[in-house]
Amino acid sequence: MRKLLSAPILLLAAWLIVLTAVAMLVAYGLTLPPPSAEPANVVVSLPQPLQAVARQEPAKAAEPADGAAEAEAEAEAEAEAGAEQTDPAAAPSATTEEPAEGADTAEAAADPAPSAGAEEAQVAGGEGETIPLPRPKPRPNPADSAAAEAPPEEKPETAPESPPETSTEAPPETPPDPQPDPAEQQQAEAPPAAPESAPESVPEATAVDEQVVSLPVIPPAPDQLPYWERFRQPFNDADSRPRIAVVLSGLGLSDSATQAAIDSLPAAITLSFSPYARDLERWIALARARGHEVMLDLPMEPASFPNDDPGPQGLLTSLSEEENLDRLDWVLSRGSAYVGVAGSMGSRFTAERRHMAVVLRELKARGLIFLDNRTTEKSVAPALASELDLPSAINNRSIDERQASRIAIDARLAQIERIALTEGFAVAMGQPYPVTLERLAEWSTELAARGFVIAPITALVNTQTPR
Image: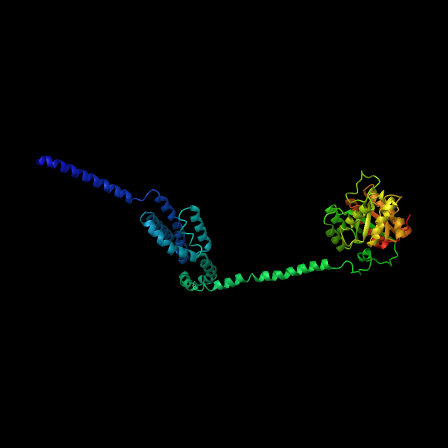
């Protein structure tokens, strides 16, 4: 019986021994750090080289006269300390304690730039981001002011005195850190003074622009004067030199050509705008601001109609008098501050007395002048204007009608000079071609030297004899 009972007891004892051994192994395995803890140790050890550098810098600053042997001894000691910190048990405690001591000394002694670089390196690693992120926000502000103020005071003191004195003087320099903060805040508040001065300069610039725009080109005329006299440009009527009026028509359809004509041509040249132009009021205002007299083109039916079309609002002989008056009213309503209308095409319409009489009566009632472009010798406009006592002028030459070239334009301008020299007055019309603008600009500069004067179209009203 004793043998039978001793056998199970031995088996149970053996099983207990095995289970305790397994439990001890499991407990030992649980105490070991998991494999994921190894990269954490590597990441935590990143600040160690920075601390070593921070320790070496005060050591070198405190003992600049020591020999190379002491520096090697310190390097070996730091290497041993680093080896001890690599242990899994000692690493966490070292890393938690050293940033509070070494990092502060490194930030107080060194510039803020290396500390920012170290923090960026930790963030770039992607691990341990919760440690550096809250710290750089409060620390750089006092550190920057302390680092910016400490070097100029330490340098003159370290030169004549020993380095330990600089370390003793550093703590008293840190309390004044809160003082520059209000000064910096005052400096930060100082820039708003610059914007206050800026608005003062802006009104000056706008005031200059307003003065330029508000300069009256034409003095205000009484309302009882005819419309063309209210908006005419001043001219010296006592000037006895032969007068030449140049009217450039078809403006407003090309922005570049219109702008070039307004800017490059003399102010005495009259500018006539197409009623189909966009922004007509703006172009008229700009031309008048440059000193030009302004007219509107009056599209009329040519002999080659419908091959040559005067446009949807052109005056036609096939329309009734009321329809032509409606179209004339549309043309005249397109702009303001002009002195009259200049004929455009119209070789057939100007030869019809009945239609022309209706148009010229309406122009006289509105106080406007009429410039006959003289596209046909059968035009009845000059004779009718004389009968109706309508202010009018007659075109003597179209300088670029058939051929727009330098030779042809110069030849036509020479003919205009001969007509003005013979009769005392001459009118020339042209289109805003680039070559026309070029030749007119050059010709006008030499005209006064040859004894002529360029006059606005209103200076030649009712001065030409109809033919």
